[in-house]
Image (cartoon, rainbow, N blue to C red; front, side, top):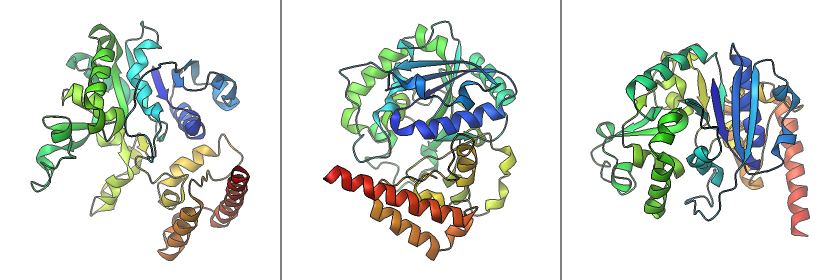
Length: 328
């Protein structure tokens, strides 16, 4: 089974965390393909991944496409690496029939192989290009907002369904034979300023609702819990992949105090010596969110609170020192 990741140096730690979670959950050897912006990335693969018993092969490609404009990157939580998957045909072996694409901010919670086998079989019979989870349905959107200029139906002329591209099963043979790389890049050029959700918008605009539907458990997100009145109706044992979508990431203070953050950190520890992965993009905002977490008691969701406080202060000081050095 073939899995593909597309990310850059900013997401190395997150991707390694995702990959080790996947390797520890599968019950047979898998092949992993990575498109990355660093030509020397291969030397940075942790041994726990490179030597894992469930890794059949690891293939790394350096992204080399030039002259493309990738919209809506500045001041967001993503980098241009999100657009790399539009170019997979230029890197991966043409002999591959199917791929499973995973975002780097996803962790695997249970063996996905039997479920993916079923969905890949469905995808092949359906003649669709991809299988994905539906993000939003036009008929379920409040009529007061359905025609707003920022909705996918207005921006992208999508008819009804819009999918989340964080996890996709891809009919790669169909991708190549029907020239989807050209279709996507043409649409990327056409949309430009209309793009909000990056390459996900591009793919939805081209595919336009013609995709195989995955269940919520293939791409489970924090807002799936937050949007339900009865949060006990979900059995966490049913979740296959947990997707930390949006800006509230578990390695940032605004996402660290969610109960789901433990899914991420317990896999992070398999690779790194730190108990928690903590990043401070904005020092004052980190302190503010830390204080808010204590005040609203969400901090109590953290496992091993004293260790978190210690590592929070330690990484905060390191960030302050690094910032001061840059300003000198």
